[in-house]
Amino acid sequence: MAADPNCIFCKIAAGDIPSTTVLDSPLAIAFLDVGPLADGHVLLIPRDHYERLDQMPADVFGQVAALLPKLGSALQRVAGVDAYNVLQNNGAAAGQEVGHVHFHLIPRCPGDGLGYRWNAKSYAAGRADELAARFSELLD
Ligand code: 5GP
Ligand code: ZN
Image: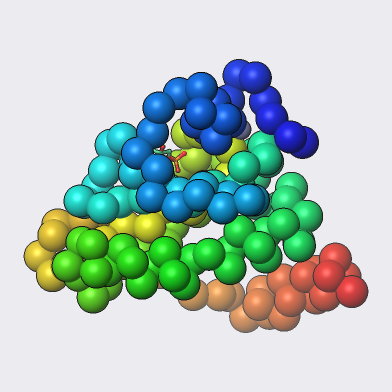
């Protein structure tokens, strides 16, 4: 889908809403998050409207994702850090608030207090094999 008239990131991509753009390429742009978790927190988005990652054609995804290494490299130099997170939320339960695919690049440094909960569980006997079999059916 090219653009959604109700989508704030489509409006940013079209230049109809101002943003602080840091990368401008044919298929994607990156701009500063208006509510940064750290100085230099940027969002990389495809120019075209896709609500979720799994709706993107693989080739478009590939071309957008190919910008992550150089953006991540620049982000470290701009923010003066040697660590960052790439975060990409799909669906409200995953924390997605804007329904246009975006990658957060968040500079990190020791003691920044950001963190996140990582409540690791373990699989009951046989459950991992069940899940792997289901993945295989769908991905074959
Ligand atoms: P999500 O929770 O959907 O993964 O993240 C959406 C992000 O978009 C948030 O971090 C929020 O601060 C950012 N955001 C929302 N509206 C705007 C906007 O109009 N301009 C910019 N630059 N960022 C926005
Ligand atoms: Zn959009």
